[in-house]
Image (tube, rainbow, N blue to C red; front, side):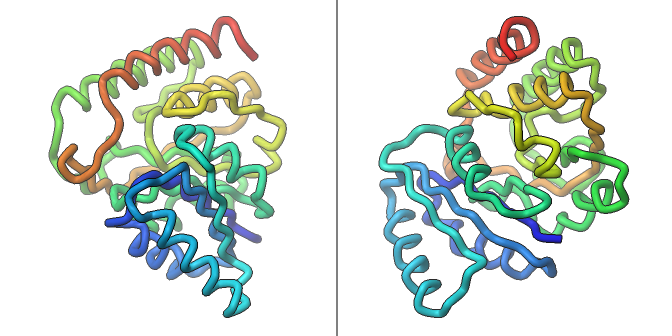
Length: 234
């Protein structure tokens, strides 16, 4: 079994090194696919450096791909999936909000052939940093709206930890470029009738001062995306 761990990255120079280190330390046969989405803070320069070192060391598990301009998280994931060779795909954010030590919990339903897709929920009891109340309320409302259309009973549709059997999603076309990836992929896996599990994960949320990027505007776009891909688009 080969894992493809896709890391979309945009301006994460403060955390990218530690994220790569934590992912590399997980005890699985894996390829790490980092898609730099037009970073301007030094992330790209750092990734260029370690890509060259990986070539010199003959390490084939690390793939680094560069977007020439910022296109958004969904676009970076789309690029990563095109390059993925593994049997299972894990989406791993480039910040430190999600902990790779949760991989065993995330993978278990797939490895036991109970699930095709696993969502890591921040709201099922795992330890989490206490931050923004209205973000929490907004997440609940967006998840509820998504559930109404997909007929899934998710607690955290917007989670950054999503795991897929590659065979289950290889023919799903992802069109959203930004954070619309989350509601779009949820609508499409529901339409395919894939087996979906949720598991509790730990969550170490960032403040805006620490680099958090999602805003209320992305929440409005998520509502539009839910309607678009559940009612009007394939």
